[in-house]
Each structure stands twice: as structure tokens, then as C-alpha cells.
Length: 291
Image (cartoon, rainbow, N blue to C red; front, side, top):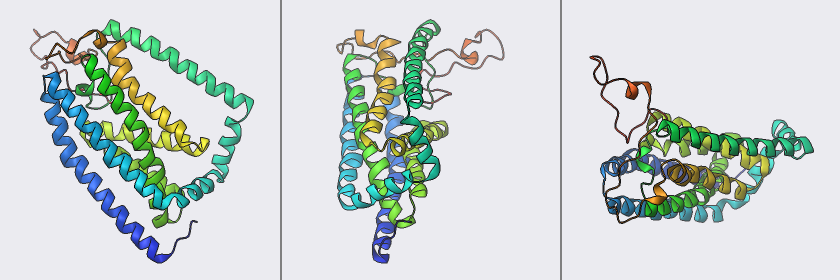
């Protein structure tokens, strides 16, 4: 248990409740409305303007607020991590990953993921597109300038979101709960709910991703490792896939209305239009899976 003075616990509870309420209202109302508008944009100028706005707002909302909050609660962040690492299952995993066999398995997994990515890119080219998890197809950059904004958004998310959701917010919540597991879990859940604009599947997927990042942070004890992994994860979606699969790096910014990127054909899309029961083809900016 991490003990705190009663007055500090009450104050932390009020701050946490206010932050969570503000985040959820923003996710449900503002973010969903803006993303719905963004999906209708055809002009790359308008799309880049919205990406720039999201970058600034994210840096302030998550990065700056997370940094300010961490200045106040940083003693609890260190104590929370140390207590979590002392739990028997976590200690066992840490011992294993530090062994020769564990390091070898980690290297093998990274090599395997790299090979799977290469194979996946080639398969996506043959299929004519990729399957995405959640309603995020509209986010995929469509030309070289948008790729730049995708890279900037990815790097910013890796730093600012991990700073808040893996460090500052759990440290604030542990003051209220008194133990770290529930604080980490609640922070990961909030992280997922903030992706409500991606639909229910997107919320579930990002919550699971948040839990994976939390586990990596606890096992490694390094927030920098998690920041890098988060940035790479987003770069895969917002830079690598558009460039490697769709070749958008070859589309100059002078093309003001680049076409939406097609998704991989599903059975419904592949069904001949002449059949009487054929469903209308899905919009290229919606998806049945998430990322």
C-alpha cells in the first residue's frame, strides 16, 4: 500500500475526477465531431490544417498537463513502479527477460515482427489495400506533406501520451487507490476511452495496447523504452503503411485533392454488384477492423 495524507487523497481524488470528466467529454463530443468533419475533407490543405491543430492540442493537453502533473506527483510515480516490480509475477518476468534465454527470445520476436511486417506489406499490395482496426482509414496520409504530419503526430503521441498515461495519471490515481495495479489499469482504460472516435472496436484495441505498454513499462522500468515503442507503433500506421503499401510518398503536395486510400477488399466488397442481394460497397473511409 502507498499511504498518503487524508487531505492529499481527497485533493487527488478531486483533481483526478475533474481530469477524467474533462477527457471523456472531450473524447465523446469534441474529438468525435472533429473526426467526423475530417473524414469528409477532400482538400489536403484542410486535412493538413486539422492535423496541425491536433498536434498542438495533443502536445498541450497530454504533454504539458502530464509534465506539470508529474512535477507534483513524481515521488509517488517512483514508489508505485518499485512496489509493482516487487510483486512475485512481475519479478519473475523481470528475471526471465534479463536472462540470456529471455534476451534471445526478445530479439527473435523483434526479428519475427520485422519479417511479418515485410510479408504483410507485400500481401497488402497484392490485395489492393490494408485492413485497419477501428474507424481510422481517413487518418492515413494521402501525399508527402501529410506523411510529415503523420510522423509528427506519431512522435508526439509516443512522448506526450506515455508521459501522461503511464507516469503522471497512474501516480495521481495511486494516491487515491493506495495500490498501483488499479491505478495502472484505470489509466489504461482512460487511454482507450479517449479513442472513442474510432468506434467500439477501436476503444477495445487501444485499451489493450495501453495495457501492453503498461506491462512493458513495469517490466523494463523505463518510460523511454515505452515512448519509443509507442512512437514506432503509430509510425507504422501513419507513415510506413501509407508509404510502403500505397506509395503516397510519391504524391506531391501540389495535388490538392488526393484520393482516399482504398482498404483491402472484404467479401462484401468483392461481391459482384449485379447480384440482387449484393450490399452497397463500403466507403473507403470506414472499416470493419481497427488499428
